[in-house]
Image (cartoon, rainbow, N blue to C red; front, side, top):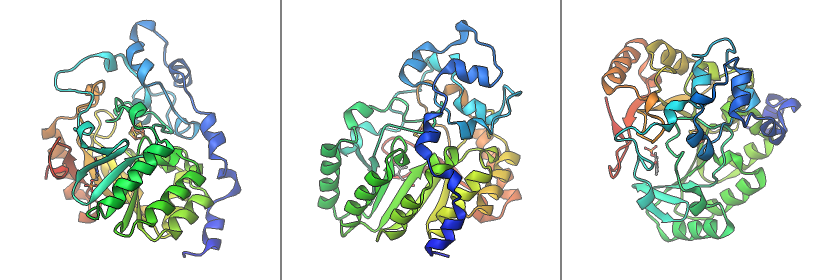
Length: 339
Ligand SMILES: *Cc1c(COP(=O)(O)O)cnc(C)c1O
Ligand code: SF4
């Protein structure tokens, strides 16, 4: 299944120009309202939030939103609301304590053996609950200098065995840049594992190009792709093709979701999600309790509700399809499991 011909047939020509797909994304709040059949009322425009974290929705994702439903679970993830401009006690700009854990610009190490690289500030979609929506990307740019310092720091620490490419979304980088970075990482002898945290294959499935698959297939590093899918409606035929192409390239596929009020705080939805991802070779990994990030408080699900949902998931699903409910606590040595 790992031969080239296998994914030549999996990736039809029509999904090859992801940059063009990205360019056609919605970038304006008013356009998203218009597309979703919602009213434009200047009193409810979240001006402060939009100035720092603009609207961004790719067409492929937009096409999966039910246009006649203001409560659509996909729409709620991308629709800026006036609630974002409210301050809520306990909700901060660095909710998970990353800022002080940088080894070099753009290189974070919070956990034993694993380091995470902020490879880019860019994402294909702007998820309104994003825990890095206030991350100081300008100080941690994907410049040649910062990358070269990050590689030097990784080379100097033989205790690091896994490198996680994150961001932003690492698949915002061109295939050429990714290939060159992954080659450099593969040359660090003590690195064993490569992990890519991305939402791209779900929101712009054409991003899964042959070039990308070849790069990931050929690295010496054991590679996993951790997707970010929150709702079964996010998976359509093109997403299935993209996931299958990753699978046939021999990659380990995992999924993380964020538990979001009004989106997926429902055992039936999460059961369907687990079944749907598994049908496409992806196993559930984490279900994150919302990080208390400024501007996202309206997505918070109470911990007691989360426990009830987990109880229902355990009742309905085989153990391997139950995600681990976790909470990120600053300074903790791992993401805290909540049972
Ligand atoms: C989440 C995270 C990781 C990965 O943690 P795992 O439990 O291994 O998935 C690594 N580094 C940072 C900074 C993280 O936030
Ligand atoms: S894709 Fe990830 S990093 Fe980008 S906005 Fe969404 S949650 Fe944040």
